[in-house]
Image 1 (cartoon, rainbow, N blue to C red):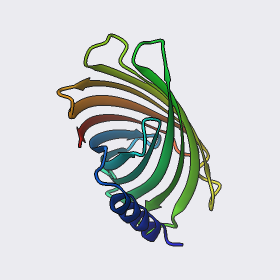
Image 2 (image 1 turned 45 degrees about the vertical axis):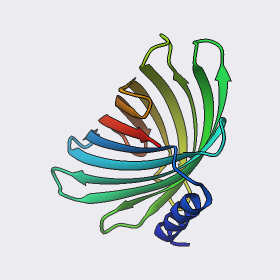
Image 3 (image 1 turned 90 degrees about the vertical axis):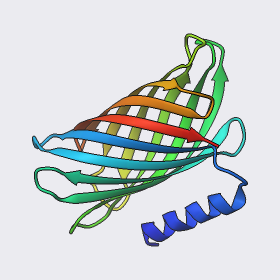
Image 4 (image 1 turned 180 degrees about the vertical axis):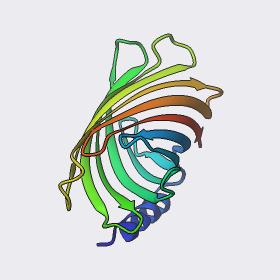
Length: 188
């Protein structure tokens, strides 16, 4: 099955089966690649809470290498199961599974599966958010996507419906890069 058709069907299924989305997330990233080039990245992610412990998401990202001017698209669908914990206060640990496709221009698509573990926390009982996560991913149609992916987030709730954050990413393995992201989230 074509990954673009799969993602389009997933989006339509999610939108048609729920009354509203939990959040829309937008990000702008600046990436330093292992080959001493840089890439600009724009990402959109739709997340819907199925219930208080389970959410599903669809992600689309467009990356452009500023040196080679080559482009890459990334598409991903995932499901996350959250478990509240008492310490630190207002926190949850989670496990997320993902299916994705990295589609470099003029090259074959590289599909992958991934498992992510993480913690979400509001440690000071204010509007400050902290999130740490770690993903292990493996290529399904390629041996070039075996990676470990770590992310550190620091966010601030502007209101109950709007959040801004900064995130630092570290990808190691067959792909190696470091990225800074600015994120903006709108809840519905």
